[in-house]
Amino acid sequence: MVSVSGVYGGLSNMIPMGAIVNKGLTLRSGQTHVRRWTDDLIRRIDEGEIDPTFVVTHTSPLGRAPEIYTTSRDKKDGCIKVVLKP
Image (cartoon, rainbow, N blue to C red):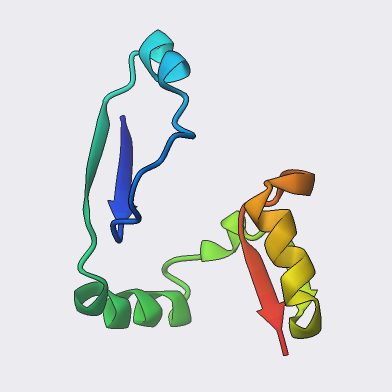
């Protein structure tokens, strides 16, 4: 099963429906109540209960934000999640 949670972002045409059907996946989605969960998630990250770093593929200085944004937007270089550092 694939669950998609988050804040509604409009239409998406990049969903690989053929792969989803061939793999027999079930899609579920729903709005995330960000304000409700943020404090608890931050606490759990701070306490080491959750390690979100597995999704970070790129780290970049803040001054390169426009360039790394393009990399992220275009999914170049295997880019999934970027951390910008001041």
